Length: 327
Image (tube, rainbow, N blue to C red; front, side):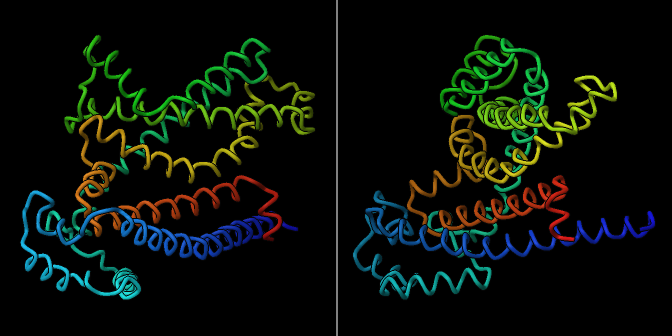
């Protein structure tokens, strides 16, 4: 086989892996999004209260029975539940997320304005968590029992920290005591630091544990022994060989990690008074704004599916065994 044909075969293999991952994740993604929409619809119907009252301004509006009945007819809330469900699915299939009961604006416009802030927060936290995890795994792997015990303690402690508790401690230390960062989001870069740290530190504990286990497993593999026989040092072996081996399960976890970050954003955006999907979701649940709640949940589900697709494809491209299966 010539070098050119080998290169073409490699590209076809990578394309086959990417196509196979995309097809599988697309089918699973459609099922997940449909299940999320269905569960959200029926869960919101179980919450006590009248959605028509939310349209008219909430319990304090003192709306008349005639006004409530008119709103129920206008929004189809007087129809049987299966009819309302079918109407909701039909609207979603046409790309219509409906109109906010409380704010009287299209849900798509509302979420479009809030989405960039939450995506920036989650992406920055994911990158920072990976940097923390890589640094801890590289330091502790092969550095002896004491370093391994210290790293294990750091991983367990950071992974167990609740977001609301960690946010309170960070505000007390870096805002109230040191005055380095503002306690609320100001729209400037400094206002992003504490929310990102709050989300990144617990996630870094999970990622570091997975990375370190993978690197320890890789150090016992024949290719590492061969590299040592060629005279490569520990750091060189880690950078060239073990990180790639250990990154496969950690990359696969990134899709789940983003879902965790987005759910954590509900707490973080509320504590730091930061606009975003999480804070919008909390306000919508409080106001029983059904279209907004459904829209936020579906947007998060779509992002989760897309991240799963990217992480599965990246894992397949990093793992030569899966490329070989696709060839």
